[in-house]
Length: 85
Image (cartoon, rainbow, N blue to C red; front, top):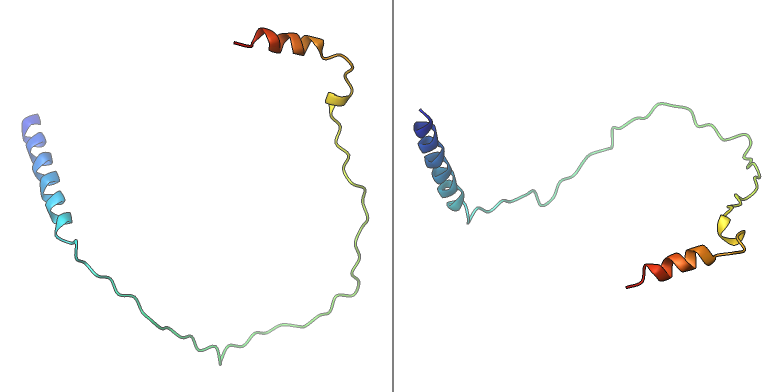
């Protein structure tokens, strides 16, 4: 039974690969020009002008880094020296 399934799958793959090879010269043409008529388009609604445009002021975000706070970098320097090859 497994030999039959294997034989069928191999024959199916060979036929599908042959079918793909036949369509090498396939040319697809798309529409060159298409227009839409928006003449009868109606939109219902109200035109409302904004009453007040205001912007809230806020302070810039201040980032804090521990890098500049340290006074002694000797342990890191020695670790880097030990890791040199």
